[in-house]
Figure 1 (tube, one colour):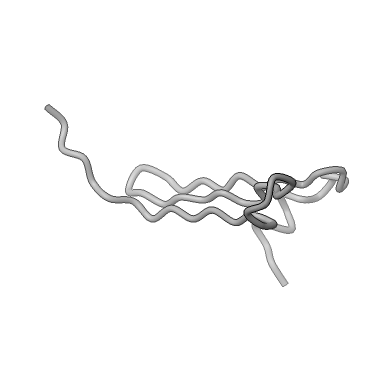
Figure 2 (cartoon, rainbow, N blue to C red):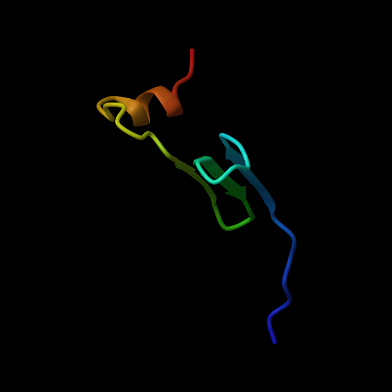
Length: 55
């Protein structure tokens, strides 16, 4: 059986009420890193460049 390893995992929300929204989920492991970003109605043009090359 494959051995499981711990990975770093983070969840950000706007709150814990019924109307709260998930804003960011991210995890990092030896295989890869992933970030899932909830942008709502914000235009996504250029978003990947802004995330990959911050100020």
